Image 1 (cartoon, one colour):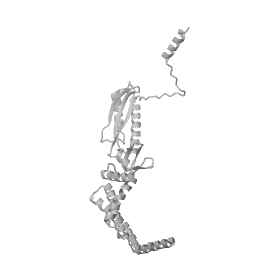
Image 2 (tube, helix red, strand yellow; image 1 turned 90 degrees about the vertical axis):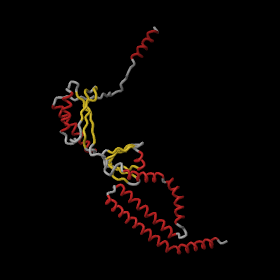
Image 3 (spheres, one colour; image 1 turned 120 degrees about the horizontal axis):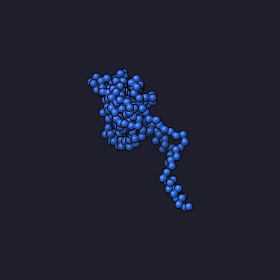
Image 4 (cartoon, one colour; image 1 turned 30 degrees about the horizontal axis):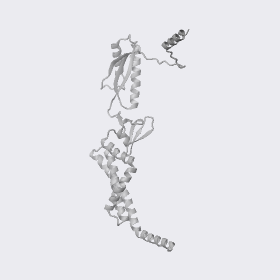
Length: 301
């Protein structure tokens, strides 16, 4: 048998089939382009129509993504039927059913992030612009929610860096939302000398906090004696301010400064602990052990 002749016959048959399929290929390419623009147009219509019926922004994102997926799924079915007329829709769906198992195992994390992303968008535990803290098994991350996509949640940290957290991690981790309400409570501990008048100090501290611009006037201000320590009389001071980290720092600075000035004006002494450090290692000797050693040495003589 002439192998060269067999190869040429095979190539000739392949070229004949390819030439016969050229009209189908051209039609399939045209339909793919039409599917692309159709998916883009329909998704834009959905994104512009849904906000008019007072639907949440996260749900608009979900419907936008699902619209593109559905349009492309239908388009791929039609393109497959154009390219291979002998293949029916039932055969395509059966093949997709078999391959979906393998694809699901190979891209388990991708699909997990996809579905958990949809659940997060539906539940909406936090919104764009919220300041949150995510406590996962490996590390913690804080930042403003910059974007919620199907795969990841994007956080913008206070130092300007951007963090991408998989949605599966967001769904299974502890998430603290700091800006869910318009106000957030702050707390500090202040110590005064034992000789000071407790009620006078309490009154001075409370009046000082009431004068602070960053402290909310609509919520309570509490000043409690919580303990007697080596520092003196310990006060726990509570107040409410804006929840953003920058506002929290500004309020803490104003409250501490105002309390210090008010106590100094009233001649109320503040106390504090002094840490002790040693330049060289501190040697601790066991006195009892040393005495026993001396007794043993003395008994020998």
